[in-house]
Length: 89
Image (cartoon, rainbow, N blue to C red; front, side, top):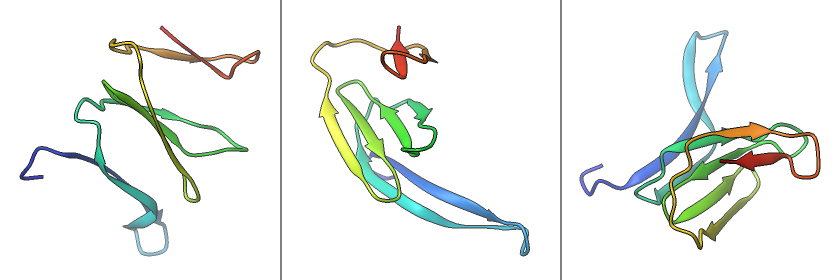
């Protein structure tokens, strides 16, 4: 936008109309350094939005932001079976 703020918005594909329609959620004013989206599979569903100062979880029914205590830049992620579903490097 005009203030260089970051926003996330979902869309769905309407196959019948062959068009995009607004999805179940959107989130305004994310961390300006947010540059990585990590899909969260069922049963939780949603997305993790990784920024320079925050990690945000968004879904159709929930929103949670937590600050990152260590200043770092996440380059990659991998899904694990146990003990935690994600490992970040």
